[in-house]
Image (tube, rainbow, N blue to C red; front, side, top):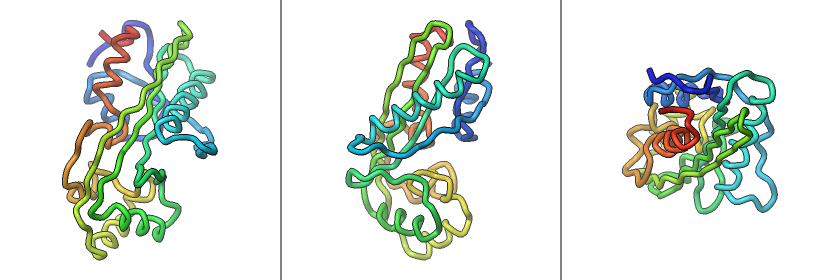
Length: 195
């Protein structure tokens, strides 16, 4: 595992997928979930929305936690310019997956690295284009029955039961899981949080 030069890196997220990605990259971090309002502001563009939420998550956790570097992230699915958040129920999941069926959509993750000691804050967004195959109603129903879609933006997880829905990806794979690791790592290097 890679040791941090300047104290603990804190991941402001309850997502086990994000913490797994951090570990795979060899980044030692502690996990402190953020609790913020995630509503979209009037007129807010998708990339601006996820960057704002990632910054608010990082800063909220930094206020109540020890450590130097705080990472916040937020991921959304965008179809025809509309943000698809987490489904509110099974019917909402059916609506989302039916809409994504046979279509291209974007997965956008905003992330922020906040240096509590230096007061420096860097936010970025990364967009990946994803194409779904045409989904049968039975496939959608079977996937929803697993419960997996209910806490996922756009009602699916590429690393889980929806892996066979995805025909192609243009861009960062880890971004679709919830954290664009190449771009995040580069920011951490620039801020001297990792070697």
